[in-house]
Amino acid sequence: MASNPVFDRIEKDARTGYAGFGNAPAQSTPYPGPYQSGPVTDRHLQDMYDRPSAGPVQTGRVTMDDVIMKTLSLFAIVVGVGAFGWITADRNPALGQMFWIGGMIGTLIVGLIIAFKKTVSVPLILAYAVLEGLFVGAVSNVFNDIYGQGLVSTAVVATLATFTGMFLAYKSGLIKVTNKFRRIMTLAIFGYAIFAVVNFIFAMISDTPFGFGGTGAIGIGISLVAVGLASLSLALDFDSIDRAIATGAPRQYSWLLAHGLIVTLVWLYIEFLRLLARLRD
Image (cartoon, rainbow, N blue to C red; front, side, top):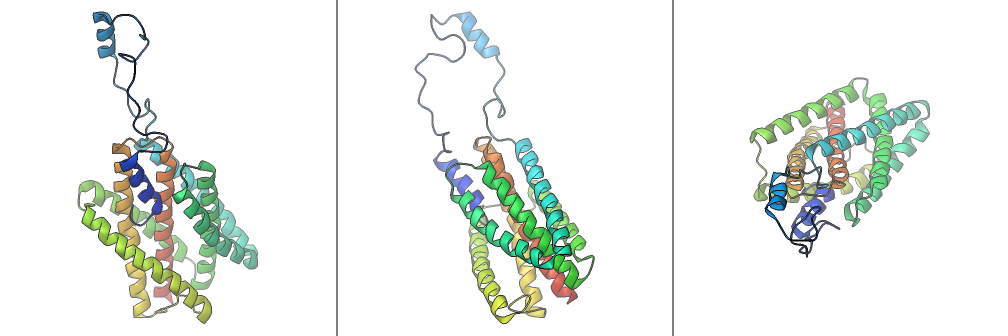
């Protein structure tokens, strides 16, 4: 995926061979199965022919069901920990501030380790979900206190609706992920990432809530661009998942795929929060 190093890694592995799952050497035995010695008879060949073909589950490859279940598991962790972060931030704003700042920095560090680690580490992915939950819960409470009730619920509904719409658009072929599309998205998201870092530093130094543009027309335009980029990134995620399944990624990669999808969803949710807050302010 162009916007997510997790999916970049999966696509690279698909081309060069997954870690521990490269091209296997040719078998020295004349045929697989229980017949490892003796002559090959017609009965042996017929038995082999009659056996059902091994599916992705039998061969230890990732399936769509795997990705869905892992995504739901990580989503549940983010929501559950997010609720804890919300309650804590509501009762103790100082601790809540530590949660969202610490969660933001922690997800950045752990996310980079996950993306560039040679093996899939489920504990790290679960730790990322916990840190992300603390960040999302605490920062959502801050937005709720400053900009009024209903903002968070509106952002949640907008995120889920966008996810559903992008999924239907991708599956129906309305949005087609081509190599040119990926290149354009890569440049656009890379540019926005640089801008986001600079904007965050500017906001901290100038003590302005949104940094460049504020809550004016320019600021709203920036948020609309960010929401658009995050939304289109979902199409890249869906395509990367399909590619991983088609190329026979190992089953443990379902954790990595689910992690990447959750990362994009949270990014989209945060951008909706910022957009709605700017509109209210």
